[in-house]
Image (cartoon, rainbow, N blue to C red; front, side, top):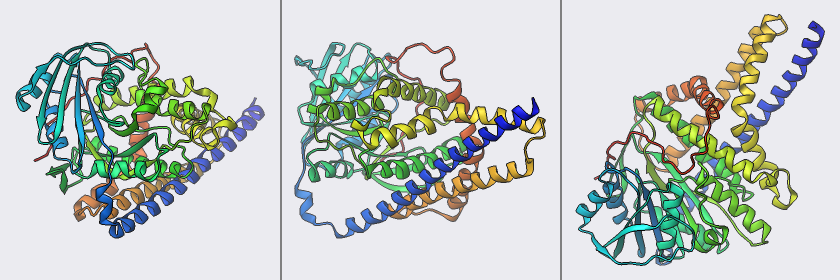
Length: 467
């Protein structure tokens, strides 16, 4: 029995070595590629031709909202101050039970109108439509029956006048130049069907006139660790996947989409919990299957500030929903896996999300039990195991700090020495503890699972610090 266990644990050890080296290699290449791309873009921005400001495409901004009375008015006010020639704002109140709609009507003197909406994509019907004009921006509020975020976005797409639309959350604000930045890939390449922007956490930021005026690292460790995680994710792996058109996720908080392509692909799927990822993966499948030239890039110059959960309970709700959405998207489009028709998307992107996102908590849990068994049977060098784990953790922390400070430098953010020290501490905590919280949430996400993709998550909101 001991010989069998020794052989079994040896093979398990080989697997984990390959698994960890694979992740470490991908993380290193991602951070290196992302950092170099940030520096390149910063240099290009210094040399950009001012004539570029004369080129634009009209954009519809869709803001789905459900019980967002605390933040929705500030979000809309920030959108009205964007530095962009032609855009409209459409807020879709998806059956709110609070004053979301009434606050908007009062704040912007909106009037109810009789406007028919052609439903090119299925969605629940509207109850009322309100409109007003703020300067040269058309502001529309659609109050509809509850159908979930995906259904609300489909209503917004049906009501949109322009060929491209932005989807964003009602607790988020865009920087004043975000629209100009996120349409640049479309102006450079007419095959772009979707484009993701950079989502940054607003809990510790102060914005004035759509520009960042104060930034600090928060004392709340839950928020601080999410900042480190976001920077590593957005500024590393997604820029890496840009190199082979392999992005499978565009955050629901901020993304640009070609209306025609989304309608042709069927719009948002209201039956999933991760409608944002599912749509992007489906666009890959739709374009590849129909041999349509396409591109789905990510541009870090377009910045959206969004609230992050500030408590463990709210964080667990959010990440449980994300993980279930990831599972639904990957299972539904499993034909991508190792399929030559999808190129690097099937051989790299899908493989990465399968083993290092979807299955990683189960693999890590299996690793913990295996190591515990090895220790009990005296089949492992405990000191070497601890040293290996600490070295691996240190490597991950260095990569995270590299992504964080690369973003700080390239976006000209002033960070105090105290905030720098907090960033280092948050990074170490994120590597040592935060990942295990997330692993627990993702491992237990399927317990008591019911298909509730049409429901909104309930997370506590706070006022956004904007002027």
